Length: 260
Image 1 (tube, rainbow, N blue to C red):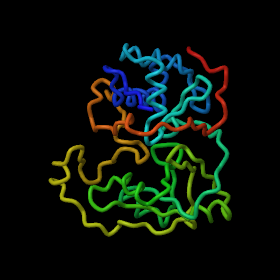
Image 2: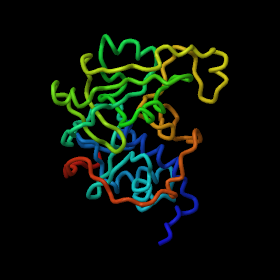
Image 3: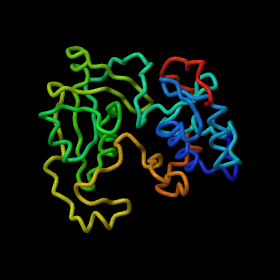
Image 4: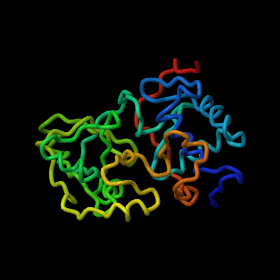
């Protein structure tokens, strides 16, 4: 069966950015109340999106959530939430997973040098955002040259240290990783990039300046006037992905969630 294409006039890139702003960062600015697990009624979120893009309907949002790769949002019983990347604390309602032998996290050389002595703790988020493969972690490293990747001995951390891991789409969340469960940190000996070369790159930054959160995809980075233009990095056309079954990662949303 031929896959339905998105309706003309609906810009998925901009809608994804706006959903990230609402569900990860600033629900209060849109007059929305979020429960302790991150859920907001889908109808209310649709109305908030329509304040900026009147042509967007609930089915457009459902289709975007279903088709997005990687999986960023989920809908459960008429409620929607972001799966990860929040800039405020939320409760984890999932059951912890039995992790693989190793997990990985992309980071900067500056931060990576501290890991063998300090372990891993969240910096600009409430949870660490880990990757299942080294390749994905490399893509999330913010070094302009060779990527810096921290290896985590996840199975041993879970069995010996009681460290819990939670699957949220392609991202694995954890609260902290003590030093004894940190493995190899690769990319620490990479040659520094010339500042002039780095500044000339699209989206480049000066050496030593903080980069964007490792867990946030380029398409969903939001801050300041993020949704007014929404014209930064292109996003993969999700309409080319094959449809999958809806995935539920946590408990059902609390019914008392509602608008202010």
